[in-house]
Length: 366
Image (tube, rainbow, N blue to C red; front, top):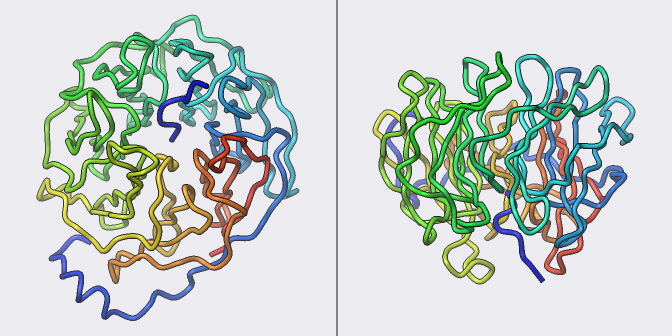
């Protein structure tokens, strides 16, 4: 059976002992079961649309049982409904909301190999249209980041010839609907994270090339080039990242070279002003195969869900992870985490250790 790769406070830091002595965070919220998707999915995408609905596309039931189907979640009606199908079956693809209100879907695995194809979803028409232009490189489990300009930075991923990751990067030009090659990253990566910073740069962290690495680099849209920055404290891939209110970046979980046997609970924070990663106390649970981007709540706390039955919040004010009440029915890997307009978070799909995806969803209420 083929196992698809990786699908997925400004100021002085105090010591871990000081953090532990702080009072527990309040308003931690609860996870509760919600409705069922029309298809059981993992490795799918979930994109918040301009009208507040969520586009859920692709993914797989299990290895090699891939979908081209898509559905819409309507938070007002608390239900899922079918929408137009993608032109290709995809798992581990990228999906981002463009400034036009349409959704760019690109890359992913379509079978034993990756694709370079891309398509646009139009919420008004409810359908996908294949783009004439393809990406420069086929990619699965790559990262797509919408820049302040509206263009999309695409980094890394795996392809048929480089399952350990590629360094190639490119830009999707939203005005022309075409892809443009740019200088590569300094390191090959798949299952990394890409986080848009407040100054418009993008932090690329961790991932796997020839091996799981601790390297990090910054993309500057002014020059379209990457520069190295401080290394992660812990080499990791299949981890998650979240932008804190103060502009720092939380990096948490993932795995080391041992994959399932090397699941991490450790976490660290990147300070873009100093260009270094600093340790914070670990999560309460080890977890990997996480959504690449964690949700920042209205409170400023970061919600981390997936890779475990339980969820938790990172509270930057006390620099501590706090367990969330309630739990999912199993450890959900390659699930999605989508913040809704009312501040709640839709948690959808994923699979436990038997590789069989679920159609079940949950909602986190702050």
